Length: 255
Image (tube, rainbow, N blue to C red; front, side, top):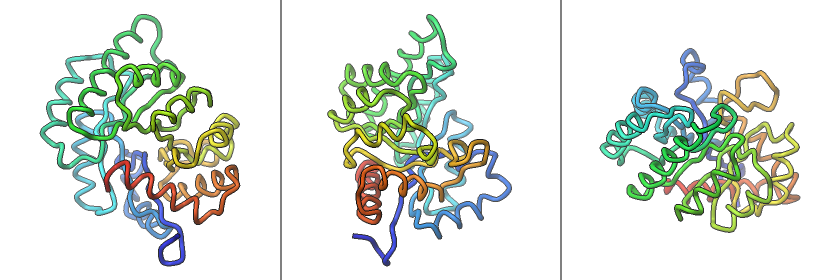
């Protein structure tokens, strides 16, 4: 099932364009490639980040760019401005995201604005026929409810921190869930992995955060850590599991 006798991976969500990697990005990418990572999808949160990420992607064949909007930004005008540029750059993008809801930072009536902007981005993804990468910190149930109401199902829930019950509701509509290396220390992630079909799972690093060890800088090569843990939880052969994750990602992003 594996190529060259070893597993192959897609890091379906990270931030390799972030300043944490400005000093040694070449080495980080090299380590990822040596680990079997063939594609790194870097998710942006603003126009400035998008421009930087596209510039970096031109230097590394393995890096693909997802155009997102910080869920804690509550300016509909800024969202529309970014969407105008995203539509212009559509051919250079792997997906829309990350976008979504963040009820950890956003409280009260501001959450209504956040939902409105999230719905806007779902419509943009649908219009452009691009997959949607969703952030849903402390808002998993609500993000999935909005997605079900909008009827868009080409969805990747990244680092989902909600209940397994709501994850299963999303999976029943074909949503994917990407598992970060922090699964090795998160009971919630382990429980979710156990509940979800492997056909709905991908791997992510979310680098530079969600490393296997708290406080350490994460990097794309650590998707291997995720793969080992998920295969263990699912009680499936490691190489076979890796190939499922790989093909899920390739098909989702149309890589």
